[in-house]
Length: 107
Image 1 (cartoon, rainbow, N blue to C red):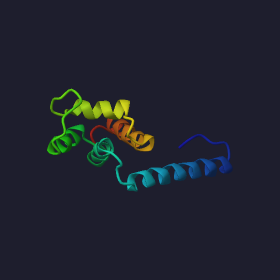
Image 2: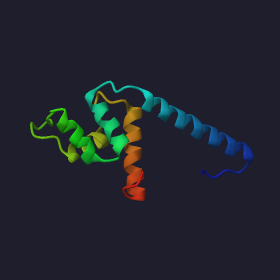
Image 3: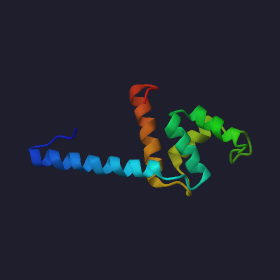
Image 4: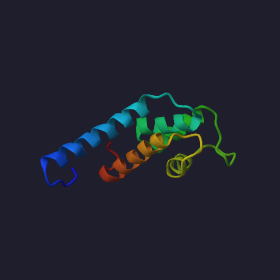
């Protein structure tokens, strides 16, 4: 919770958090518009770059290098983004990365 000096500030802060959460929910309810977004949805769903990598391999998609898709490719997508990825979805994937680092492998 953010610091506040009175109840009005606390209410405003909480209302802002509600708006942010509702925006994240709306983003997660949307269908992916690209294969990269499908990868990010899989990562967000599983919290695992390895499982997202296996999803891509099962689709028969190779990496940009022409080799099998790797967990590093998933991590790079999360870190660097891509032109066909929604910034809001990318932000959620990055949030999952931070949650995993903060609390171990648990989400």
